[in-house]
Amino acid sequence: MRIAKPLLLAGLLAGCAQHSAVPPPPPVELLGRAPLVLPFGLEMDGLRVGGLSGIVREPAGTWLAVVDNDQETPARVFRLAFEMGEDGVTSRSLKDVPVGAIRLEGLDGRNFDGEGIALEASGNLLVSSETEPSIRRVSPDGKILGELPVPSIFKAGKGTGIRNNEGFEPLALAPGGGALWTANERPLQQDGPGDKTASGPVRLLRYERRGEDLVPAAQYVYEVDRIERPGVRFNVRGLVDLLPLPGGDLLALEREYVELRGFKIQIFRVSLDGATDVSGFDSLPGKSYVPVRKTPFFDFAGIGFVPDNVEGMTFGPTLPDGSRTLVLVSDNNFLRLQQTQILALRLNPRDL
Image 1: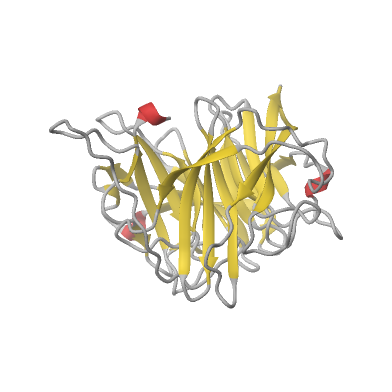
Image 2: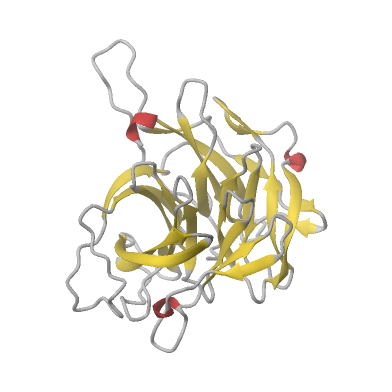
């Protein structure tokens, strides 16, 4: 989803003190002190770099980032190269962070609104577009190999399906590649209110791998938080990415924007234990079901810099001390007032 004009937020995530002389590391903390910020106007292969809405790591250590709708320009995925360590995400030369561009055959900003990306073991990509919504399988050189089936209740229509610009934002494969997760950003028309300041139910959609195919298997209700202090003009809060954890839980990234106030970015841990599979429900109002359970995992408020429109996350490399890393990117909407940020969090592996 396109959001503009970041301003300031506030808040703080504090570590826990222990009686020992050297306290153990907190479950989650910012790696380094600031994000890597790509300069506005950067190009690769004649294409503007920006609008990074989803990211995934390649086995070689490079990264693939899918680009959000950029008017009539070619739909694309950029290959990025940067370093990670105790100083966070760094690069010796910002202009050398983009190292390649994959043009998605036959697609541009008029028929593709890129939001999520996943990488299969075969090397093929999966990319989601939120306007239809759709999930396409793409070869490493950008050829469209096919589309995954999407349950009809998600398809945009009159009174049903996704609302404008609120389709499949998240996309991530589970460890081992046996399942794929996506979700609508805000409630379907038949499931909840159109009020973007209100809490609302979205559907986590899980695909299962059957042979070479990925097919819809289950749906679970996830309640997006409400906006506690709405502004007088534009407001929106939605689910923008998911990341499956080894034990079966998920990380969920929620992004809030209030005009003249800015962004609020939070990550929640999601447990599916006891949640109802609602794939048999054409609509949710009046139905009895148990939603997934979500608990706070990390809040970007007060971390030392102003987070921009953070929309994508994926696991990064393991650090020498055994810590896992979580890498995130922001979509600058190709606006000079916004930033393309790449940043990382340190995760204690015991908490995964």
